[in-house]
Amino acid sequence: MVARLTPDQKVACSIHEILILMDAAKGLEVPGETLEAEAKAFFDSAPPLQNSDGITQQLDQFIQRNSSPSTRRIVCVTSGGTTAPLEQRCVRYVDNFSSGHRGATSTEYFLKAGYAVIFLYRKRSFQPFCRSLPDDPLLECFKPTDESNIQVCEAYSEAVKRAVVDHHNAVAGGLLLKLPFNTIFEYLQMLQIIAMSMRCIGPRAMFYLAAAVSDYYVPWKEMVEHKIQSGSHLLDVKLIQVPKMLSMLRKDWAPLAFCISFKLETDSNILLNKAGAALEKYKMDAVVANELSSRKEQVVVVTSAEKVTVQRDKNRSDNVENPLIKLLSEKHAIYIEHSGRCV
Ligand code: PMT
Image (cartoon, rainbow, N blue to C red; front, side):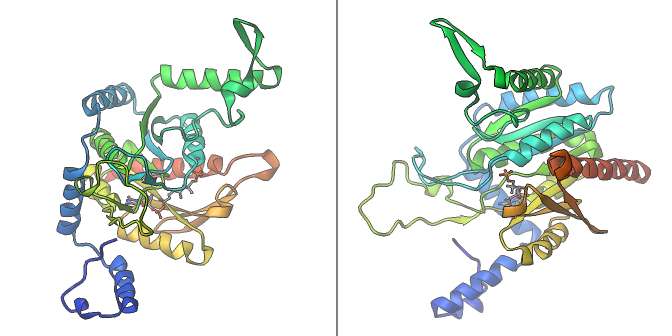
C-alpha cells in the first residue's frame, strides 16, 4: 500500500505516526488532475482487454436495439467480486467478497420493471433466473434414464423450466446482455467501454454498481511473471490503491446517467455516515448502504434528500431486491423527467 504524503508529513518517524498519516491520507480529497493521472496510469499499465472490439460491437448493437425508436431505459448492473492478481501468469490473487446474488437478483427485477440490462458479472458467480436451483444444478437437477439419456428430476422440473425459459426470453429477446470479468483490470476496462457506449442515451442510462471492487492492486508492469515461490516467511508484495473510478464515471464517462453505488460495511455504526460521504464525494444519485450480515434482509437507500430503509417482505418470502428496484426505478423516472425539463 502506498500513501501520498506532503513534505511536512514526511518527517514522521515512528510506525505509529506513519499509520496515522496513512489513515489521514485515505480521507484526503484527490484533486481532479491527480485522479485523471492515476486513472490513466491504471489503464496504461493494464493488460489489454481481450476482444474489446467485439465487446464494443455487442454493446452498440444492444443499445441501438433498445434505444431507437423505443424509449426503453437501460441499466448496467455490476455483480460479483473483482480479483487483483499477484502474478502475471496468475496462480494467486487477492479476492473480494461477493456471491453475485445481489446483482443477479436485481437483474431479474430490472427486467420485470421494463429495463434492458447489461449484466457485468464475475465468472462463476450467481446468475439471473437461477435462484430456485440447487448449488450444482447440472448434477442435481438431472438424472440418467439409461446409458444415453437424461431427464429433469421431478422435484426440479418447474424450477428448471422457469429458469431456462426466462433466461432464453431475456437474452434472445435482446433485453439481457451478459459480459463476464475476472480481474480488476478487465472490470474497469469493461465498465469504461459500457459507460462510453451508453452516453448516447443520456439520463435513460442507469449504473447499479453492486460489484465488490478491489481497493488495492499490483500494477501489471511491476508484477512478477511466474508463480511466486514459497520458502520465505514473508511475502513482500507492494499493493497500490485502485483509483476510485466512480468519479471518472460521474464526471467523464457517462455524466448524464443515473448512478447508484453501494456501500458495504461490517460495522453498522459507521455505515450511514460512510454512505453519506460517498454520495457527496462521488456525486452519486443514490448510495445503497448494506451491512454484511443483514444485507439480504434490509438496505438503506441514501440520497441527498432522504434515507429510506428498504426491507424484505418476510410474509411473501420476497427478496429485498424487489422493493429496492421498485424504489430506484421510480427515482430514475423522476430523474429522467427532471432532466427533460432542464434541457
Ligand atoms: O454479492 P452478494 O453476496 O449478494 O453481496 C452483495 C454486496 C454486499 C457485495 C453488495 O450489496 C455491495 O455492497 N457491493 C459493493 C461492495 C464494495 O465494494 O463496497 P466498497 O465500500 O468497497 O465500495 C463502494 C463503491 O465504490 C462500490 O459501488 C464500488 O463499485 C466502488 N469502487 C470501489 C473500489 C474502487 N477502487 N473503485 C470503485 O469505484
